[in-house]
Structure formats: C-alpha cells, structure tokens
Length: 216
Image (tube, rainbow, N blue to C red; front, side, top):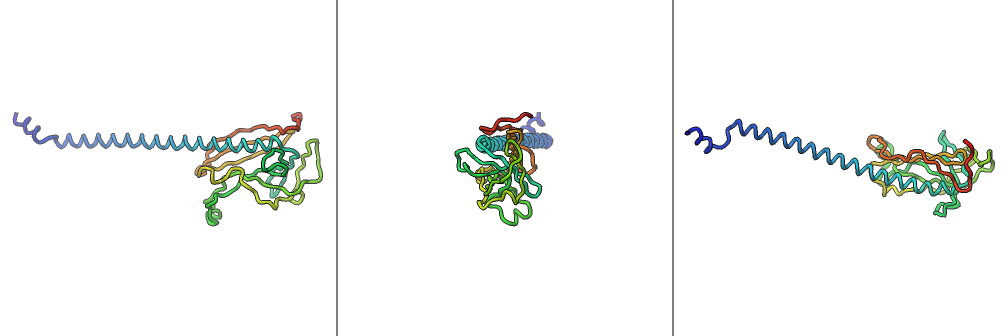
C-alpha cells in the first residue's frame, strides 16, 4: 500500500519516462520523414506540370510556323545543322526566313556565370536569315548550304518564349528536320540540376500546307 501511494505521489518512474521520450522521438522521426516525402513529391509534381505547360507552349508556337513554312533549307556551320524556312504564318515572323535553335541565357546571368557553366541557356531562340540560297537540288527545293551561301543575320535572334517566363531550373530544347515533305519536331524540357527529362513531345510530324508528302 505504501509503495502504491509513493508511486502515485512521485509520478512516472525513470524507466517509464525514458520509454515515453523514446516513443515521442520515434514518432517525430516518422512524422518528419512523412512531411519531407510529401513536400518532395509535391515539388516534383509541380515541376513536372510546369514542364508540360512549357513543352506544350513551345510545340504550339513552333507548329504554327512549321505548318505554314515554305522553301526549307538546311544551314550548316561548324558541323551543326539548322533548318531554315520562310514563314507564312501571319505572325510577326511572316515573310521572314527563320529557324529555331536552343540557347538563351537568363537575363540576370553574369559573364562569370556563363564562362564557368553556372548559367545555362534555357529558352528557344528564333534566328533570322538575310539572304535566300540561289540554287536548288530536288523536288522540294531542299539544299544543304554553307555559311557563305546563306548568311546569318544582321537581325539579332529573339526569344520564342521569354526567358523570364520560364520556371527556374528548366532547360527546353527543340530538334527538328525536314524530309520527304515533312518536318519532324521533338521538344524536350530537362531539369537543370540532373538533366532528367521532365517533359517530351516525342516525334511530331508536321506537314506544311501546300507541300505534299513524298513517298517514304
């Protein structure tokens, strides 16, 4: 009886207190881990959703130009090929010979960041060409020309999608070519940190109006 009364007056024993502390600690670890997992999952879902929106915007804008394109010509420089074409889209590019390429740095990127690779180009550029090539080689007027035959631009490239509108950490890329009367377009958006592909359009075939598809 005396022992029972002493226990009630003195509260928990040392062993009971230690067990309670350990259990509370374990509960905090479990709950904390769950919060981190939920937070990381939410951030990933948000980033993926933003990447899908960005990819769709780029596809929409490039498709508009490619569907109305005429006179496609492959321009080569330093081993890199860039397809140019005359836009007939009714947009600001209409009537101009243009092409798309990767490569615009964030507006706040310093020269040092660009030099050491900290800053990464993260939007798509519209490049302008100032002179049409004079010779043609096939039924679709397609010819690969050199830098001397198709000069690049007195007009500076412009951004297809404003870089300021692109969520930080995303790097969009566009790849397209022309064959058999058809443009083949692929747009991807990667994570800047680990180059993981967040969104991809896959290969899209786009047939310009007025240019019939050739036999494969």
